Length: 161
Ligand code: DLZ
Image 1 (tube, helix red, strand yellow):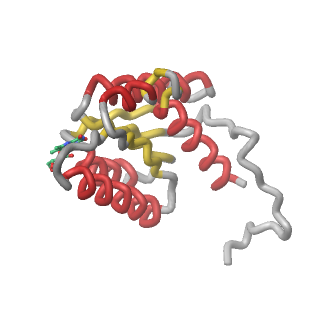
Image 2: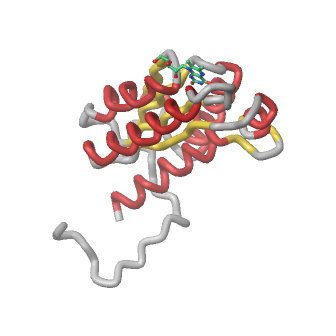
Image 3: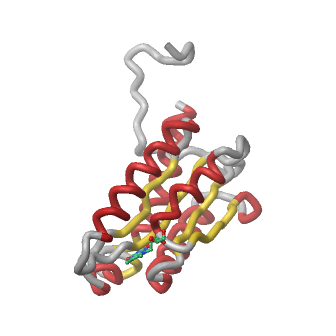
């Protein structure tokens, strides 16, 4: 058991930690790039607004969401990277491709986080159509890139607690 565990710990993610010294990897899928670029802008803006330094942010692009797992692993294996944010958009099509990609990336990203014991965030939209994607990439349902960045920050606080 970790020696720094507190008895009856009252850790809460409501208070955001200081991230001025934290390094973030951001993996961006090129498929549906008008959407994933909007997710990236949201994530970048949120990290900077919360105190991250531009020089501590590392962006890598991958061809599609299926490749986010390998991109995340490439970054997560670097000891100096504190958290990885994966951004993608898989739009439901007429074949089962959608299910295979979504399943693979959800499991893959989870495994990378478990393997390297650091936050690896699932910022992947899985909408039925382009409009639903737009609604979540800066539209009426906000920007999920922004939410992915907040989740990364909160999880860094969790690891520091
Ligand atoms: C092939 C494919 C399809 C049909 N749709 C999407 C999509 O909506 N979003 C996405 O991010 N990627 C898609 N891809 C590409 C796969 O993620 C992957 O790049 C290829 O299957 C090659 O491994």
